[in-house]
Amino acid sequence: MKLLKALGVFLSFILISLLLSIKVSGSSPTKSYGWGYKLGKPGEKPDVGALYESIIKRHNAYYMDDNTSKKLYLTFDAGYENGNTPKILDVLKKYNVPATFFLVGDYLKKEEALVKRMVKEGHIVGNHTWSHPDLTKLDKEAYKEELQKFEDYYQKLTGKKPLKILRPPAGTFSDRSLAIADELGYYTIFWSVAYKDWEVDKVRGWEYAYNSVMRRIHPGAIILLHSVSKDNADALERIIVDLQNQGYEFAPITDLFIPPELFVTAF
Image (cartoon, rainbow, N blue to C red):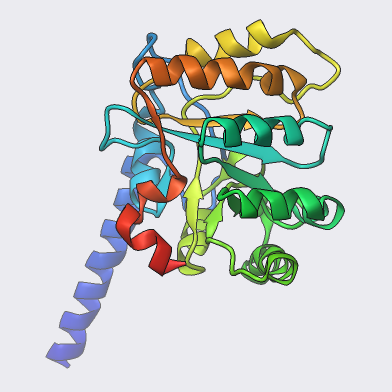
């Protein structure tokens, strides 16, 4: 009886501690958030706030690289093709810059040649889910199916297993959704540099895109661009050249969680 009583006290203590930690952090496992931050001064990282920092640190999730002063990580989100990706790939090839393309299932099906080119030229294709749902609203099985359908089609198309990296649609996340990604072996990739670039009916010119990116750059940044933007495609070469002239190095996203010397053998 004493043992059972002691066990009961211990379990009660664990439960109370868990509830208190949730209360202190200001979050609950199922509460949904939209990724965002307060911009820092030029050259400084943005402020994501104590709550988001605490959530990110509990999971295999990244929004920047804290361990470097000069690495940058270039990523593109692509829900559909708008005619700009060939030019983007041409620029990346010209300057030997690695990038990560987060794609959805429809893109895999409709743009097979471009996906194969991405892989052939050494870029990484990331999972942006099969149908772009709000992952925080899915049960575990539906969540898993979204990622698995993408994996299966990608492997069928390219003959390679995909790297398990995930960008949540619209940047929506919760403690629970990140925990499921962890359990499925995924690294969740957010961003620290982005601007409103997905409205294809609002073309502002390459200088607008260039200035929007350059004023937000900071050491260790994960840059998010949408490949549907003609402005981005037109500005990309100037962005790359000027950042390299400032001493920045464009690195593959795997440098965040896999030592470069192990990447080739790991995947």
